[in-house]
Image 1: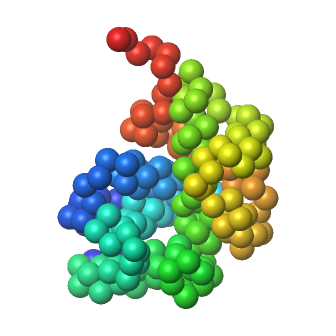
Image 2 (image 1 turned 180 degrees about the horizontal axis):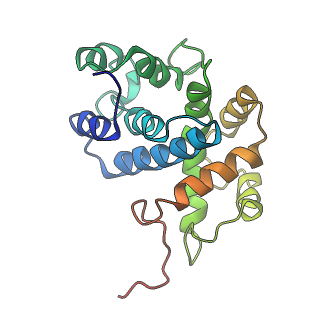
Length: 193
């Protein structure tokens, strides 16, 4: 394959990932990566595809995350730069592949960040549709909120990008807003019981 498309990524991911929470996470990260690509003037769909595929082996090998990614993806023809980007999101946790490109640094920074954005959006009547950065930052500062999301790791990613957490959050929120329906983040307004 010359280039990983979103369609390819969804197909490949579906062969390993069936858990609804992990599929939703893939969709969140994909949406955020698309927005980061636009910020850097890069190929939106390509970055979305990498985001969709980033946790390829997690459901089957949670204790050995990313140890079962490189060879299978290579065998499927996924380009080396995309495999490297996927491996780099585990830098310092479960891989020694340091994020160096904007794509790699973005994936590293936004992986955990999407979890906090999603949690914040779910607490609002209108979901993510009217979530502001200011409102999000209040949740960010509350260490008990979405406590499992690794804030120091997110900040390390932002630092790699040379960006502030507010700036990265704004991009991620906008990216996820564009996919609010798909991400089930439209809130309770307009829903009928």
